[in-house]
Image (cartoon, one colour):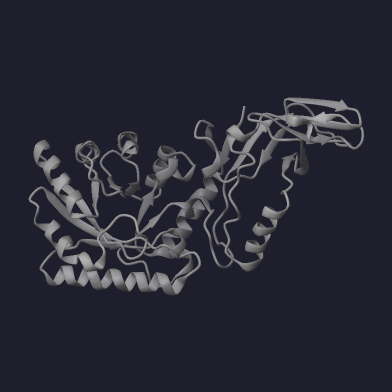
Length: 357
């Protein structure tokens, strides 16, 4: 059976590196099933290592995350005008994101109905083009602070290109600061300010403000311009479940596209597209060499390998939904040996168990 293995000690090393680099409070972003590491598993480890504020994007993550983090703050990073969603945010005592006057009205209405005062962070759109008030809409943003059932305790923006454009990132930051100053001049208490995400923390100086939102950096799989100081974590594992020898010219896999060029010993590994194998994202780097390398892979099919006993073996034939064949000719690979593939956790099926070691 396949499983995704995460080295817990190296994850903790990453957390400490990030804390030292940030120098301010960290909001642990556990969206996307904890960036593939398991939302609740990752949140629990973050709490054990001094991180006490969390963030998700989807409202449906809230009930399960609340069971894990108990009374810790949860920021829902999606402004919503849907009353059912707003009700979940308020009911579970989360921090709502308010990115429009309509979202403020909905959250205020729902909070009043529930007899609650909902904590909120104002969202300013400085160039991402999703949620948030445009700087030109600052007057509408200021009106949000007047709703009786909303308690604004923070404000933030989101950088669009921190992994490769420091100048644009700094321009977004200045736009955010200017907008916040206008809100302050109107006599409003903006609370904590945050803008930096994982790429910004690792690539751009001077953008940390009062807190940073970190998610992908915990996994070590974040785009950096230079050498990544973090441990790159996670590998998909399964046992070799079958070996056999087939003659020259024998078809392997669907469509018979691959035919053996000689008598070949093969091994079958129960890992396939269902697990996420063969669907990998590109490298998490932004240097010229890696970009050219990824472009080359579009032009010619990349040859995938599976590691068994410390050695790489070529995948032969088409990868199936649940199985992969590898060429183990002239090796001592046997049934029961551990096979592993290096794969982004975001590509691994959420149903595959995450195991921390």
